[in-house]
Length: 348
Image 1 (tube, rainbow, N blue to C red):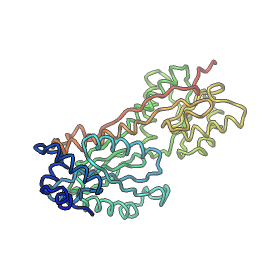
Image 2 (image 1 turned 45 degrees about the vertical axis):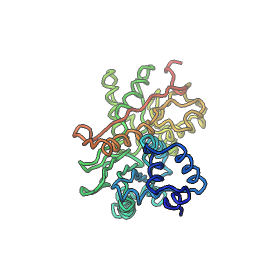
Image 3 (image 1 turned 90 degrees about the horizontal axis):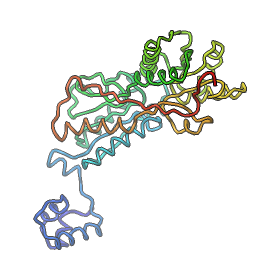
Image 4 (image 1 turned 180 degrees about the vertical axis):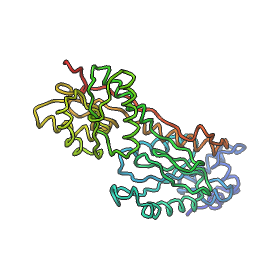
């Protein structure tokens, strides 16, 4: 590895001069600066950020821990984190716990398995002297990731951190469910079926509360018999569609685009079409939604915005020493309604 001393010797300047140039400090002549940077480029010099961080007690490194990169929501959140970190000159290092790849859905209640993977990742973040860490969950739930004596600032994203010291950035699921139901009601629907995810899931529960609030405000009777629960996947959407159609719904609100795909499958098998014979809405705005035929009305998740905000909260602590206030512990980010062709008026 090329060192600053070797660069300095080749350029016939002091190591301090090379260091000043690399760190953008003034009071260095343009000719000297040009010469040093040319040698740095030729020799492929890379600064040892960890060693530098140990000297100044700050590495400008942010650790990102994700539950699993295969989760559709993860990449957008991570991209938003990285964008904001780069804006202020912070680098990032990523730890992928691969929880879903290892155990699928079986790890949710297995704390021993969870911490056996999480704790080494947290230890490594501390070992590299990261200034802060952001945890990106695969689905919203209440979880304790960080011990009370965790020594560096941390932020939770896409879940609720139980520790009072750690702020959480989450979806405003209730508002998303409310706005979708309001849209369906505005299109003339009064008998709206719901295919939720698992009944004990926070996304499902909060979106259902929003749906109920929209019905109440519009003086539409809430029929619990029109609400059924799937498993977020296409098969459960397919399996639950027939029962809702037999109850006479004119629209089906699916709490994931995957489950909406199952509704499309059922309709196609029975000679029906979304947006014509029955209205269908989803949630997530995954890539598939735009390419369904007809294209799917859905709610867009603000994934990059969530990641950007999580980094903003963390960096404000690191740059300005800003303490998290009680009312700021949970920051909700709104989804956006994407109206396409799968919803029409029931008399069309």
